[in-house]
Length: 87
Image (cartoon, helix red, strand yellow):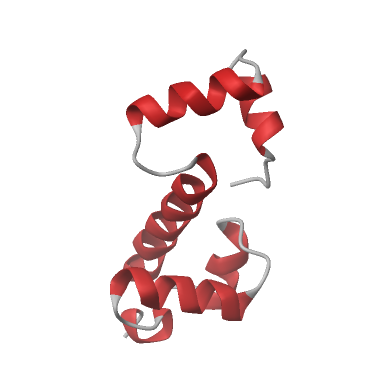
């Protein structure tokens, strides 16, 4: 859940940036950036539904830096605010 640039993602996979983007496109309809956001939202949802923690803590733990941005993206993806998912 660390903040990774596209260049870092490519480096960690042992590819050039162009090759990384091309290979990623073969396996996903999402860009690497959008895939990472989706994965963070999925992880956040799991933690929210599990309960026992504040939404703000979860937001930052999964890699978001802004709670309002996280809330908007979460609502766009799941149709409900993260605070309401916790109820």
